Length: 70
Image (cartoon, rainbow, N blue to C red):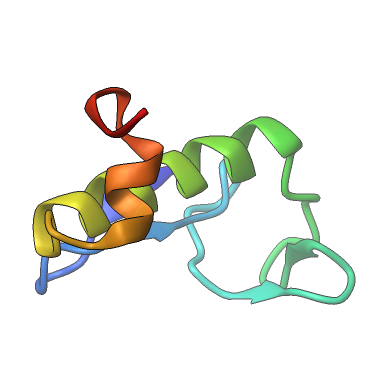
């Protein structure tokens, strides 16, 4: 589950319990122990890229990732 924090940035939350705290080494939720799926991580990384593109549209990395940047 992805939600937007008050600053507008995406944050990843547990699909099972909604908790935002994860054990990054074990790749699971601290609250309920549910594993973070690869699909959730992929969606979160895509949301981060979209956020970064809005925040810094002139960034060389964003230009490289965008279809127009080739």
